[in-house]
Image 1 (tube, helix red, strand yellow):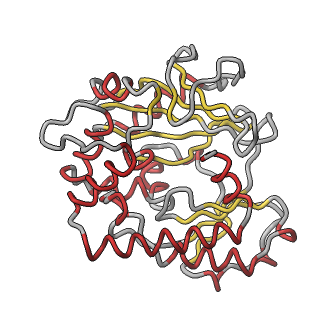
Image 2: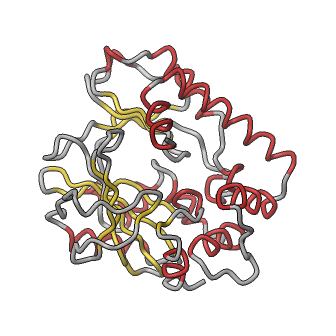
Length: 303
């Protein structure tokens, strides 16, 4: 039911606008009412019914909450920003993996629809999941979508989950080329890196469909017996990327400075395209299934 409602909201821009506006107001109330620690405990308890142990964290989710409160590294701000992270990759020698930028805008009034191709993607550089995938710009209700994007530009995802890198990030919209892989969609390969080592990969297929699969694989592309929010679907085949080994090596290189980070890639025409770097997937909440994997994976993370 929850996935159905999320998909319904994501397909209907008017519902998405109402949800986005409501989420922004909840975040604003957190600014006034809670300290960082209190907000983290409240969010964790609301999601799981449990209070995280922030003094002696053992699970993956507890350790990510601890990192929110205690880990401060300015490189995290750069890497979490969907525009600034490009400089991090350039400095590492990975310019060839960057997608083409069509424009960068500080306000919705700067978006020049007539100057853009038929297909493109708009992302908020300071957010998570704040994306608009445009397959035909003539079919988009730009009036409501500009209202949604204006909320993005005046919102800060730091407050609900206290994800530190986002606190003082500059709000912008980045417009990128539209990418499509051989499946006719765009599968992202998410490498979970613990203390600089890639341990497993998340791959999703069929998003926003009734046959959505989210599987986890080891570095040899053997399916693993756990999921994140969704149970694994061994009945659905997700092909390994042709550049799996190279992706893993690059992910580890990018992840070296950090206790934990998830590094995402796409593969288009057998070419690796960088996606993003995420320090607190799902705000670090305990959504692995079966639940015991929160502790099993927590053992991988040394803080």
